[in-house]
Length: 100
Image 1 (tube, rainbow, N blue to C red):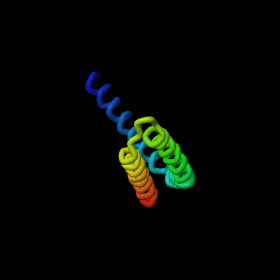
Image 2: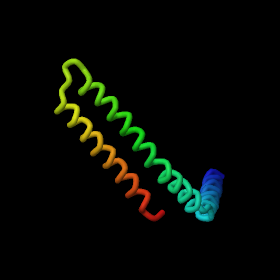
Image 3: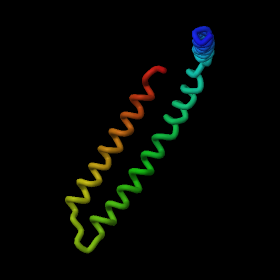
């Protein structure tokens, strides 16, 4: 009886697994994923621009306007921020260009 019970459980588990895999293949996730990527592409540019402007303003007040302001350090920080924003934006656009 114990062997029969185990075979029964194995058969039930296998049938549930096959049914689950079959149902998962029928779900079309490409449409919603493309819609999400379209929305991300539309939103990412303004968000990155606003974030960079805020970062640059903070750096200007922190390094250029302070009493012991260091112009070179401020300029390097702003250029480094621009490079960082460009790399992040490029990665997002690269991932968006991949076909799903």
